[in-house]
Length: 583
Image (spheres, rainbow, N blue to C red):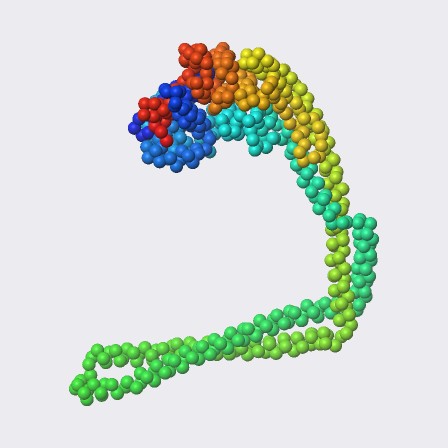
């Protein structure tokens, strides 16, 4: 992927446009018009941060809560070239959890014309464009902090602070095109061994004495066999078991019948109450038989409407007494028949239950057998516990066998990976030569860059078997300027190696790393890198630097060669800042 341009936009226009060298060095320069002015805060780091946001980094709260950016509906966009095809990538500060893509030759100010995707999908687009070759466990999100070095934490050492060593060296090995899987794969075996060792410690914490357990197992087995013999010889044992089972069955059936009796009796009572209610209604109707005479004596005639209502009510209750009353009486008769059968069955079961219960009341021998059977059950439980502990002990031996197999596999795989690393000797040699070439150009000195395969086999937790360790140092690196330059040259080594050999990932950004080094060496290194990239026709190197930190001759040469792509300062009412206004 080639970064061609960076835009700061709102929904109406392009506020700022920055065009980059598609091959070579891109210097983001901080200027000051007056001696008393500062170059800090003009937007150099902001520009690098925005490019990083556009390459998938999470937008920080400083931007997503800034009223100026939100009210102006500011969004940023990159014009990029991916395998000869132009497209635009955008992020909006009002919508930080999304990304926007647009294919075509022209930039649209209206984000609703872009394809809006989740940040996860957006990152996949970036990753495919930059890495190209898909490799398991290597993502651009993880590599980004090495490709875009942060001025606050990125230049303390070649590795980043507060990150796991395994992942750090895996990523750096990938950038140097060395094997990046060796330590992780061996650690998989070591993690399994550690898990198995934890199981062994758990078993050993049980204080298992296998000799005592074997003796106890034999004792319990003999005791249980003796109990089985006693129970088998008892003549009443089978009868006792049968009687106890039958007793339980009878008890269950008796309870079931008793419940049916209660239910039927309740229904009978309900039906009888319904019949009584109907008879009461009819009695009340009959009390109205003289209503016709009453009306004739009082008003001289019997109103037709009253007569009709009276007749209807009387007919209804006559019908109810005749039909529903007969229905309820028939139901009651059937239920009473059923109750008679149930009570007979209840009487029979009660008698049988009483006979079955006699054995519990009269036979002392059965009580003895019950005690024997309970003791036998207790011994069987104890025997199961003993055999479980014996099994755990035997499992320990199986675990030891598994550990031995895994350790043997580590030896085999480690030997194979070491041979693999040895086959990369030409790459290691080329990388070292490139590093020292950069050191000679910059300081006319040699530095030290070495790659060592950790071949040690150990069970210790901190073991790094399979790690390809990287050591890097230069003379007098204890000074900040030299330390920063060491990291610059370290990164430029893998960057140039990838560009020279036409590998993917041809972008490198350093923010603030040129502030402390000696002004006489900065220009020399930057001009050399620019020449190398132009010679190989691939690679973009972005750096931020202040104007007063460069020699005048170097600055003039940078300008003449078009290496300065942005000049940022506080002048022109802050319009020369990165966003074109002050945040």
